[in-house]
Amino acid sequence: MLMTFFIIGRSLASMKEAFQVLQEASKEGGLVSNKGKTKYMVAANTQNCSKPHANEIRRYNFERVDGFTCCGSLVTGNNDVSEEITNHLIATNRSYFELRSELKSQLLSRETKILIYKTLVRPIFTYATETWTTTKNDERRLSIFERKVLHRIYGPKGERGQWQKRCNRELEVLYNESNIVNVIKSSRLRWAGHVV
Image (cartoon, rainbow, N blue to C red; front, side, top):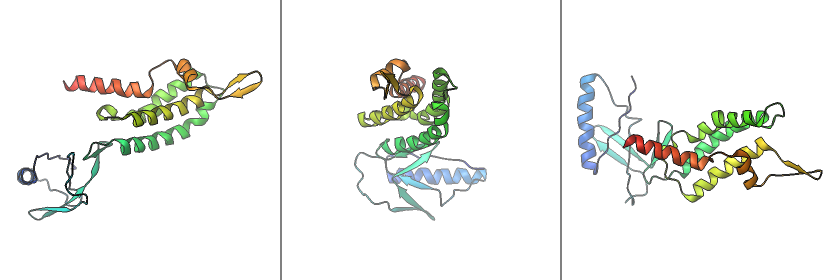
């Protein structure tokens, strides 16, 4: 049986003590810690040592890491989500490129294409975004990605026999729904209300 535990402490001494208590309780239940997968991370505004080093508790030697993935989310010591946003964009782009022929198809209506985007592409990106603290630059990256998809769905416009790319304002009017940044912000509010 595989189980994941998180031990949180304000000092290294309290972490060692909590780990030892967990070890004793685990033995009673027949569980064993995996030495290779057990790591520790310092979460602070200023980290006093930049290079990861090992920490020894009893016979275990734990590696210090700058971040780890848990339940599909990247957790870092400085709470920077830029790397996680990049990972989400890569995964979402894969989905988008798999579906781009459908999103460009003349056989499907725009409503169907929007439904495809909202049910198959956007959820890949918005998974676990409730805990993100985004910056203006992060929000700009999200908006750029969504506009790329909307450009594919709505296509160019024809004026006086020439085709032109639609401007961002035209896409907003045509889409007429909450953009991806607002969807993420509302999911954060919903999650905060749930926690409260």
